[in-house]
Amino acid sequence: MARAKNFDENEVLDKAVDIFRRRGFKTTTPEELVTHLGISRSSLYNTYGDKHTLFIRALQRYQEQTSKALNDLANGNDDAMTAIRKIFNFTVNNCLEDAMPKGCFLVNSIVEFGPDDKETVDIVKESMDTNRSTLLRIIKKGQKEGSISNSAKPGALADYLVNCLSGISVSTKGGADRATCEAIVRNSLAILQPQEAHVSA
Image (cartoon, rainbow, N blue to C red; front, side, top):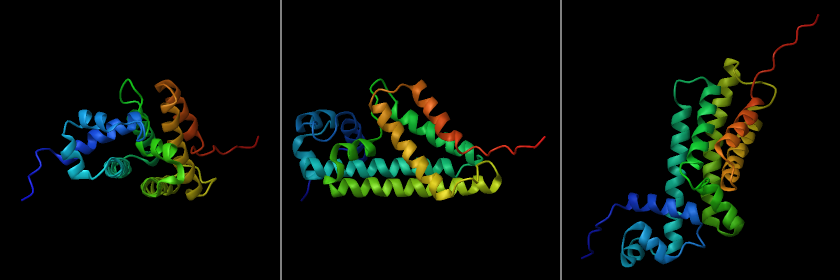
């Protein structure tokens, strides 16, 4: 009979997210994993098989959590621009949540692996597609209500915002502080503002 697990798998995955975000996959040793996760080596490998499987499980959990958080912000009662600002502020706070900026786990992973790890690429693509759909929905709402400029197609603006969010993650991982990120957010969202009509003299 298999022994019952004496740990919470979701808690372990959250700890795995933390260490992999900080150190990356390749430089995180099995010894560091065992110490950081607080479970035995046998429990680690009996449950997850190997280090890469644990990494993929953690990356999938992070993707699901962040996509849900963005979707929840989009589904609030805010106007479109406020919802988008909240999504960008959430991203900044997530990347700068403690003294050691972690960046976005998804962006960090695709930077580390490039196109060489299909499972990682698939999860990152799923995340970007999901978040693009969320942003596209907000943009269409904003263009309809007049709070977002109609000078560009909704799809193009959604692609632009997804790219801006990824850029913030890379910037924080490279040392950008909160003030810098807030300036990036202001400049990124300025393009969404409706152009005031010019009244001829």
